[in-house]
Image (cartoon, rainbow, N blue to C red; front, side, top):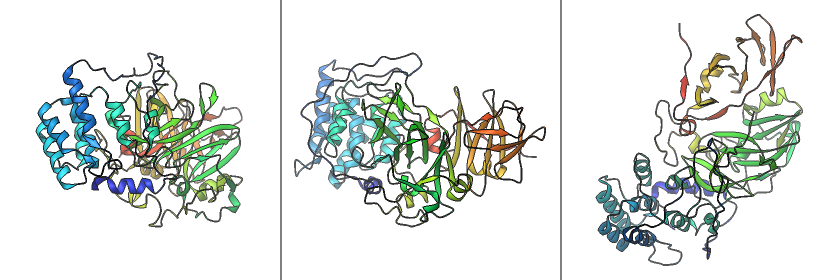
Length: 497
């Protein structure tokens, strides 16, 4: 398939991480999914309706004629006769697949015909190859009509890149996110290959790391381990065991969100892969047992058998820090080696050849996002906290400048401690105590003058009569990545005067 110019850069960047070539074989049949049991605490799954009219049936047939895989037919691509049929039928359910194929309208005549058809059906006048604008427009519509058979059509559209996409998306699949909002990320399943029990070396031997390089730092049950950004940029997922606990470090490079999850589902160890699909420019993971799609940002199943089960992944504390700070605090840490069994150079992040260099140093997004909050620049780094239905974001630079931030979130007292040199931010519950920074890194004092030491798991008091205060989980992400999933987020701002 040929991609529209607006999507070429995104696909080229993501494909640079790919470890396998596409499988162009279409499956002969699609297996039915077992039904999932829903609980009141989770959003109820939506199921695509069955055809109820001849008009729906005719529109569904036109939908399947809109695009022909150019691997199978030299005259493939967007089919102008089908566009003419869509215009004649004027079924609102055809708008969704028409928008989807704008990313493949690379031929001038096809793009022009597609743009004219969409303009006639919607009243909008974006170009026929302007997938970004059309997808954003679709997300602004309240009454989107989805045709019977759309899920199978969508999977078939991308099947030339990986026939197993049919195992993620199919007619009747339970879902709590709109299937029309799911975007293909430009790679096959696990085309960005996860690390499985990655090779690690003692921190003392990590001569390749500069002091100011960022790492994801993890400490569990006394075992410390660092995952350099430059390595995770090329893999976005690490299934590992730290301190005897199975974990999945899931990193969505597009939204700047690295999250550590306990690798357990239904009480059993589980590993995760990269589906090749996105929602709101956030990666959709899948579990290897049921092949359910999970939202990386929330740790909840959103498409597949586990939807409605009430299951969600347990988030564990993790620190984003410069290597020098992590190593100083954890001299016995291990760190991922550059030798991971893949043909990767893992360029230094300041090297223009590094994966995502231009993306991280620019303002533009690679994929469109619905209802983007523009209060801050999209890629502003924030620390996100949740307590029940309340969500709050803290601009990371303001936290590190302040050193210590005391706050109350939905009646829950918290303290964020940041270090301007390392950019590390950790969050603790305080049980109402108010803390202040000291001249010593990693030390704070409470309102009575009592000193406390910052560790990865808790605040430890010097006074043995006091109990430690637990560390709580937070999410380090780009502003758009956080607010896309928690749109009612409050923004903390420092007091003045």
